[in-house]
Length: 186
Image (cartoon, rainbow, N blue to C red; front, side, top):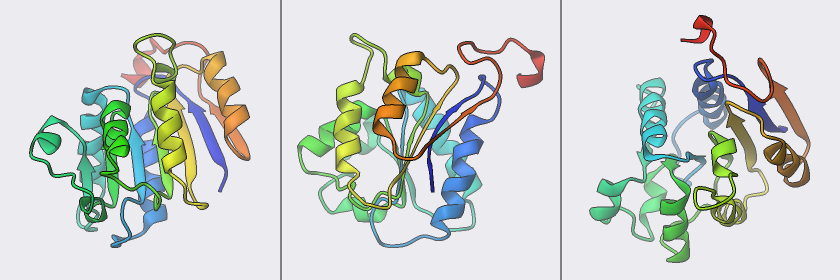
């Protein structure tokens, strides 16, 4: 039940480290709206996470969806469509766009995962701090569990996590501020 900041080298299995507990916690599909939300900094990473979640949940019946150009162009996300997903994967900008239009409801989210959180907290044009603040606020369920995963554990992300996450546990695999070059992880 604790909130998490996890840092591990690229290729060490971070995606699996959040997908399996998420699926185990949700147990089975339910018509309660979006119960798990995974935020990724890039479309490519969001697509990879979507593919893994679909594969891991095969046979269980979870409705795993991704917010991408195709779903937004086809207008698949209208105000009532959020009830058709158990798990949603998105980049922050697409999600915030729908939040501003009241086209998505995140009040039933039980798991909020921020993947590659160090990238999302960068300063400047590539940073997503404001978008993440809007997403955190929209995930208003008192049961929401938040987890941040990253290849590097930047000091500003660690400080933000200590200030904004409840009952935080920090897990570090390998060196704290670097990625691995070990063939073990490739």
